[in-house]
Length: 149
Image 1 (cartoon, one colour):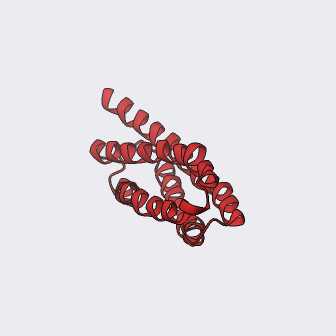
Image 2 (cartoon, one colour; image 1 turned 90 degrees about the horizontal axis):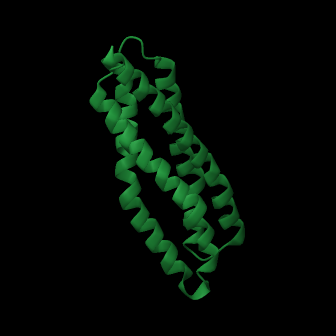
């Protein structure tokens, strides 16, 4: 696969791996400490600001993951490329079907059940992105080993 596509995918994936761990361990747990008077504004700002950061990088990750199918070099395990794409699909589905609806409910006011579901269900994305990170590291290692030989 083109080393350029793989490096772009690596960069996007690891940006998102770091971000999702920060969100899971630091940011989401703070939601219940905001307090009622400021919560709706806080949640609105969170949604707007995080989207500006995350959406372009998620699109880059998706595009480069798909491009890796067509540009896979001989000797690179294509099944790992497909597993990586499957994880991207899982992340996008989780985001669209679980996390976004939780945020939409929370933007109307703090809801303890929606908040707990958001934090607990976000482990889907956290684990999936971490697994993608492992796959991308392995693909990069294999590609660099191939280049050296």
